[in-house]
Length: 267
Ligand SMILES: [Zn+2]
Picture 1: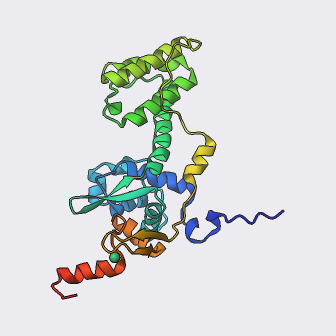
Picture 2: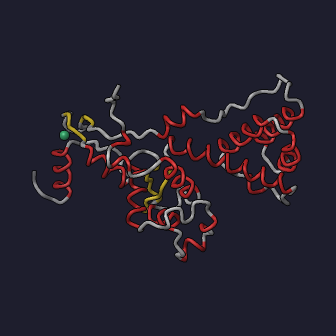
Picture 3: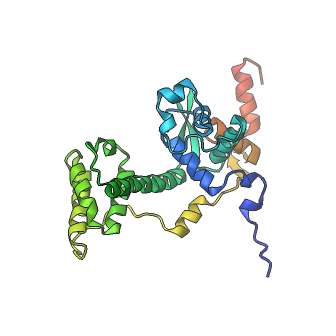
């Protein structure tokens, strides 16, 4: 039987970014989050040799050059798609528009970053390396670190213990406690007295849900000034998102009046 349900990904505009591309853009954005904008992100994804990119060491990002074959404008269009579909958002640092993760974007990024940290440890174990310092894990986002620890715990693999012990000394109390719990668990996996760490990795279904693209639909808002209801169109919502503006408080007429008033025009 034919399924008539509308598939978001069938629509031309929503097809612009694939799920592995969503992950790549999020990973590339992670190194400049809250301190870089769309242009910088596009340069990382392009694999640009731009002075600032190299100065900041962004060529080390695992997704550097992910869209090497695309033109900068095409990459920017993908980034804009990510903003319009709530994976990234624009926030202002002074007058500069900076990219930050939305909640949905961060859940996806945290998941793939924690996996990346775990793969790094697996490589070290395979090569018999214990890095000199574990400082690279300090002052990271707490949610990311707890998720990473949870992933280690779930492996039940005691070979991680030396790395954990190497790490524990440099950490703050909360993280230290979490590391100790994981060490205890790995030493005696059957021990049910181990408290579970709150952060759970996301399951496949949940991941699909997060990757699902919400299409914008016109919204009805109420004007703060005159109380009239007005339609906030899809096009205008896109514009506001790309500019990092909060939803409009006034209807178009009151907005016009306000601007004309500012310009000294009698209304
Ligand atoms: Zn109004």
